[in-house]
Length: 545
Image 1 (tube, rainbow, N blue to C red):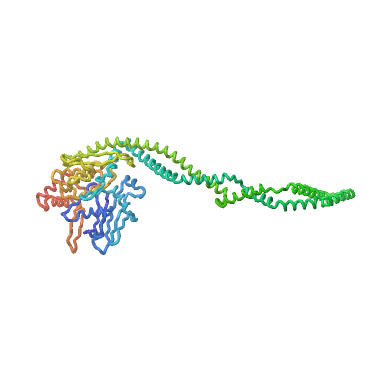
Image 2: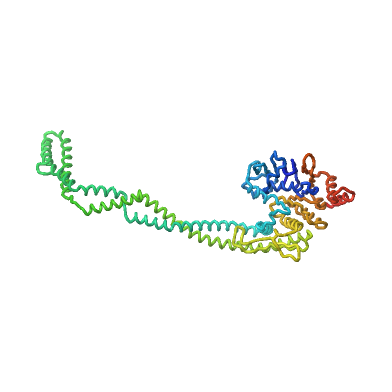
């Protein structure tokens, strides 16, 4: 509910501070006294569009500040804002800019508008509001249905969760399908590259071994000559081996005379055996060396293939691993698509079943709700009124498959029409009052404001409107501008608005504190002047309260 309102330098208001009560708050005053300016200020701070010409004194800034008391349900709805039990929303208007603040911190217009939808509903003759806008009708019907049916409430929550998941799966599938379509050529190219690498059957270290073999075969003749020459020097007649053999025999003979020579003898024998092994090896090696032009060609071709792949792919083995990973990921997406498609079928079935259950219940409660609203309309002196909640099928969305719209007619000869097209100002005020009264117990709204609620009504209808406002005020805070004393007499708080003509015109307002002040204000409303008759009527109205 609105706790207080501060207005500075706005239209014809220099500075005004008002504190409001819960229940019914009424604003009265002469025509043109500035009552609607106060409501316009509330509308302004809650996001309505205004021009800089609303600034009263052009040398100063305009400021409107409104303090709300927040219910636990409203705090839960705006959990992301971390609201306290009391919040302050302000709007500063300068010649060059307009700024919104929530508890002193600057916020954007969207935040203010979202708060407005949950905190205050302003009903004027030329303004759209929550209950008229068709997009809110399904929410209103659902709020009523949830309040009387726990199963409906549970199914609605299940549906929203299922639809959210279903929608996510659909979007994911669309992405995967688009990606897979784009990747068909990439898959073919990856497979071609992998096949090109795999068909070469290159082994780790193969290039190094081939280069060693190439070096050998390319220099086979020189290698043969070199190895045979060393063998010949070592093992041919008269070569090193023969000389070493004679030395070996000499050492054997010497060791027979002195065993101290044995250590040197053993070392010599070891060297002798090594030389003999080298001689034998080199003889056999050089004899087996043969030129192999065919193998040389094979090696050159193989090395050429490896170099070609290296130029194309860099590190062949590292590239092959990356290509295989990319192919596995893309083909894995195809597997994910199959799983998601199965999940999509299951979710669609669940969404369809739940939306059908919700639709059936909505149709039942739409009839009950329509009857309740018609009862209220009849009490508000609209005996010929008909009200219907039309439900049509549409593709499933976040709220189900139902398109919901409120239809009404207040005349026997007129067909049912969308609520937004009800023409008569007096009738639309009573229609809105009837609807709001029915929804008061299930609505998150804490404050509703009626500008000129008594337009087009008088007599018996005024009494009915007054009673309906009192009923509504049991569940929420109500503001009304009225010229009807019977309506004003029902208020919990009465504010009198006046236009002061001083050096410059200024609008002021004050809360009437005493019974005498209220009596005088009602008497003035009754006849335009204070007289014995009007005072008597005012007393009678206050006594009825």
